[in-house]
Structures are given as C-alpha cells and as structure tokens.
Length: 96
Image 1: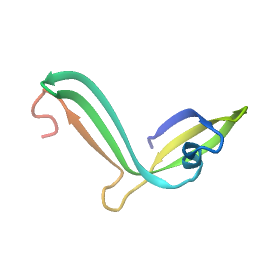
Image 2: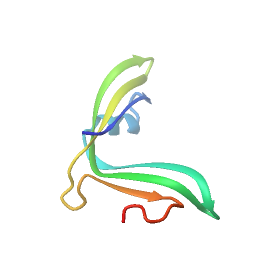
Image 3: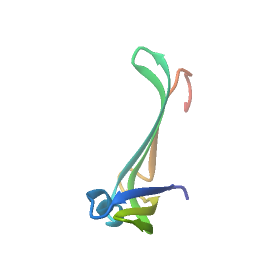
Image 4: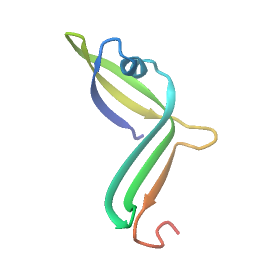
C-alpha cells in the first residue's frame, strides 16, 4: 500500500478545509521536474492516482487556523486501475 501523508493549516470555514474533510474521491497528480534536456523539455516524473480519497484528523485549532493531518489514499478505478506513471528522460529504451 502506498499513499501520501501531509499536515496542512487551513482557515476555519474555508473551501480548502471543507474539501479535506468531505471524504469525496478525486484524481491526485504528483509531478517532479528535473534538469532541462533540450529546449522546453525537462526530465520529469508524473504519477497519477486516478481515484483517491482523503482521510483526515484535526490536530489543532489556533484562533481559527485549523491544523489537519491528512492521508491521500489511492483506490482502484475500473477504467484506469490504481496509478499511471509518465517519465521523461534522455535515456532511451526504458520500459521496452
């Protein structure tokens, strides 16, 4: 099992806080960008979790600033599976 653990601070009553605690599902995309290979092309890694949910717990409330611990939990998507990965590199023949 893989996922992502984050701690964030949100304004009480904000849309962002409502999204964190709503338990709805959605797509999560994580992209890492590295050195430039050629004009406008950079090394990169893009991981897409087609369907995930958030599991959150409130850690603190400091004068209307809410601190939340949140887990991003990947789920199976009937069309796209669990994750897809895209890599851009100057090395040829990877994954063949």
